[in-house]
Image (cartoon, rainbow, N blue to C red):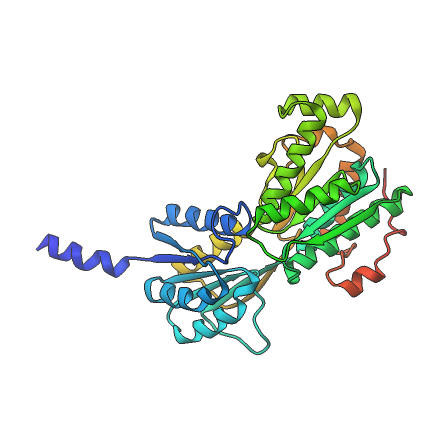
Length: 355
């Protein structure tokens, strides 16, 4: 009798989360991995099941989301490119919770079972742009995007605004080299484009290109290693202080500094892990509400990495200025452009620093 009762109770309380990746997939060390990190954390805390369905091409999105909805209580659609698929599938499963990462609902598309998260990528990118402009020795920095979709472009707007702000406040001239891989899942394309920008004189490159960025980081590591004659962190730091030369990459989405210690100057972090964690938790607890949430510096949804390996290389004055600007953004006293039009009109020359 007891065994029968257990068999009846367990399925009743079973709860499953299914994440559908975009074509970048797990292993991108970026927003797919970050989303899965938050899901796993919630699943472990709550004692529930979680699994991943990999998408290999855009044609996989609708069948994968459908399969996920048939199997799970909560379905995650990861990436802007899954917008149309999400809002075609979700209405067919009104009793299933859907969470979209980097997805803006189409106008008029409001469903109580769909929650999406977007981020103020421009605010995180501004921070690394400011640091890049402060640190460059050649006066040239690079930006490498994947496909120029809105989240990627917001990274570019912020990066350019950060560079421009530092230059206006410190009378420095910095050129930005820009390029796109047009995919998110090809590290070789990222590496080739980075090598090209390094050859043109850039000494720091920020990427917003998913798994392509793994190649950007590899390129920076190779170039800096060849320059310093070592890949050892202490050796790279010693060379920097001795010669004042370097090649740096800047990571995106997650803290990617660990991928090449000493050769990744900083990362523009987007807390997709926080969004996915709460998406699972709210669904499980029954507090889930449909709609869209936008996370920025004020909400602790974006930021700059702790710079575990490189913070000592950056002058304290630069860091102090950066934290002061973060405070202004939090207080609504300094707005970072999130469109091309706003970037074109952006002028920070009137900003007064208290140092």
